[in-house]
Length: 293
Image (cartoon, rainbow, N blue to C red; front, side, top):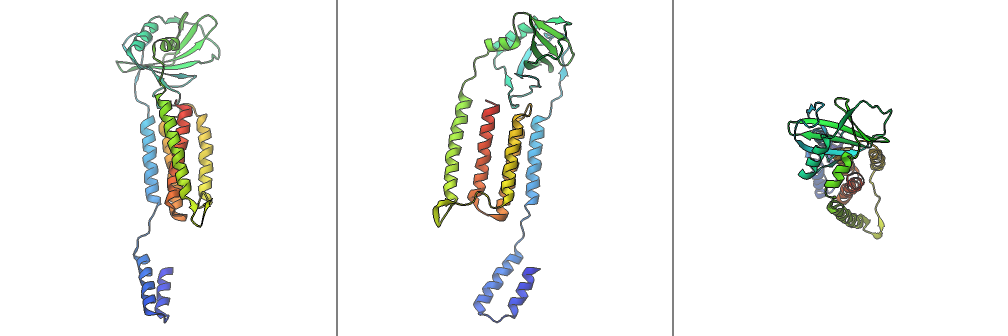
């Protein structure tokens, strides 16, 4: 409406014909251009992130084992410290038995479990296990230590067992090869590359008239609000039990997307958009190093 009124006013003003024609052309182009509605792609990307998260964390339907722990061959073992349900190594703090020799040793140890009626009041759970068998059954055990033996509780049946001389974790550590440092090395290399990338982008975001002066980090205070909330939620994520990697990735992608859309509306600086992406990757590498390695 405003552009149309301005166009009518310009038609009445006696100005240089070339200048008026140029103004008419610019206004007509703005009238003909279709406005970009960022809300629709933002909602679509948010839905895609949520769907990815739900697919990655949706629990699979599996049968519960009977009281007999050696009824089928053992296929995989996931374990973690303290109480939890270790379903996948994509969960923070979850590890998986990697070789057949270890699985055979764990199977042998399961056959030595002795049923017991001893009930420990409020036991300190040291380890949680998820044992998957080839017949698609699952056995979840919690390990806690007593004065004379190590006790186990079957989450599915409530049955309690004990081992006098060994533990599942001790057997796994005895047979499972020590994890290499490849993941840590890759994480450090990516971390260093991101630091160089951030430094490069920082140089691009300097005032052209005064190269020593950096441009403001954000184009609008809403971007500062988003960054503060992102940091606070990441701090809360550290204390969330069984945090899934997809949850972290989806959250950081959503945070970066919001700031990029705000930049497209207020600042329109492409290097600041790149900075938002790099900063989220930076946070992802730090969180991954803290919780998964």
